[in-house]
Length: 524
Image (cartoon, rainbow, N blue to C red; front, side, top):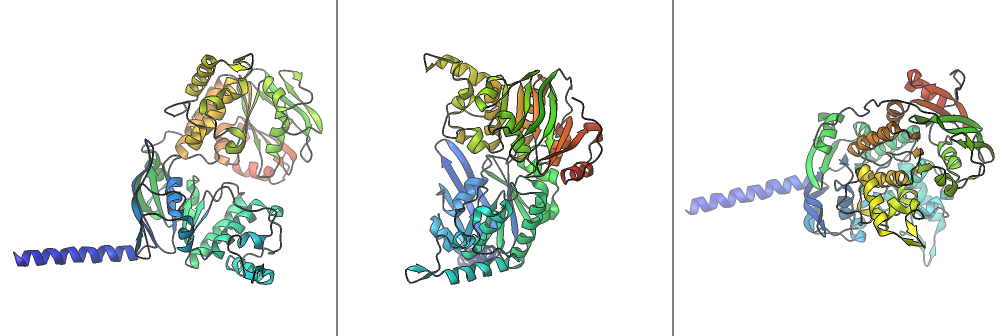
């Protein structure tokens, strides 16, 4: 009996030693973390181990629990259960300050920079370099130079942040993390606002940080990127841990299957193409620095407006919608020139605009899903300045259901939805307003692979119903897979048009980079 008990104790001790050795192998261990909001379980006993000096990708569809887990790690949220282990010490939760002191820093998709301050002031904001009661600017500038030297980048410390490009904003954010001596840097969709060349620059910085021993948790919907930067990948689905794999052990299709729980069918399904009359015609349209450009979109057609980031595509879309003033040319709808435009006039003439930034310009996050959908048609569903509730419910239900919004109630705030479902709310809004011309600016930005396929299907269905669609996308796969013809811009200038049968990535990129290629006469 005594021998059996002693053996049991030895086995138990061996297990503890084995677990302790395992913990020491990782810089951060997440153990059975749960987070419950009312009746919604955002995280359900999630565990994840992160090795020191690795790039650890964290992926999943919108609503999978990635953001909630990151908020728990950074101290922005308190877990309902579970623990974190850092340096062999267990923590039930962190405060934001405690998280920073432990060497954890997060770079969010929306940059947290004071644009009117200098680079140096931003890097050490909240972590001042003082001499008595005053800021020691000489030391501030020299310390900032040291930070960027680690990144092999030369950014003058006295530069005002608002004068920098988006890519340099990203680098300043990384500099802020390094100034705090961060050992674990979390990057949330870091390449979303970057051009292809800027992405390469970011990857070189990530490799440099990794070589210096910095650990990176990398969140991205762009699965192809993971094979360039990640060492391992953890997948979440519906708040649950699915798997952790070495990136060398999986393919993109494997990751998609882990994320959505099924194999996706063909991404871009051919649609029935039946064009009607010309619905939208732009003639010599000019803005403050874009144009002139002329093109047309027919009923049932998906026309693309192509070019690199900064080419002027969004500016043209805003001119058509009347959000910015025209400096020349005209917008013609169904053969009638619309004259001087503003958004209200555009909407009344059947033009809808799904903007690039859905969180600030597409949906009102604090407003209910129902009221977001019926916002453009309040006049039609109101009597004596009072909204007819029956019509409000009927319209929102009709168009929300048509766009297949996943929600237990249309009376929940739009902020409760995933990115893909928020985008469906925006589409529902323009369908409720009976838009016949729909401008889609980066319609799948920040949306996971499963939701993307749903949005593609909805876009095809809208085109098949006779709606004329003008699509802007920075993703070559979307441009090639969705559009019927493509108008290409470079630095505000029109470069030419390609029909679908003439598409090739090389040709599109050459034109988008400023090379004029004979594409034949533009037929209106």
